[in-house]
Amino acid sequence: AGPAKHGDSVQVGALADAASAEQLAVKLRARGFPVYVAPSAEPGSKRWRVRVGPVATREQADEVAARLAREKLPTWVLAEGPR
Image (cartoon, rainbow, N blue to C red; front, side, top):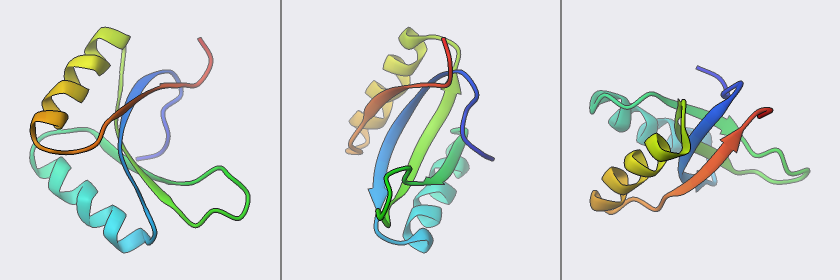
């Protein structure tokens, strides 16, 4: 899957290599989360961002973030695409 076109996503990691990012994504997908991995948009950055979503509303994203935080994952809710 690729980056969201609209809605909100929850970032759970920005990892230094694609293999580690994909490994985290596989674990989250196995738990039923819609996950995608995207390279950092920052020039020169070699980070792979693992994000759950998109979800339709900020409230849904906050609920997903709370669930992931209970599993000891760092979370950042991000708006994706135009509003």
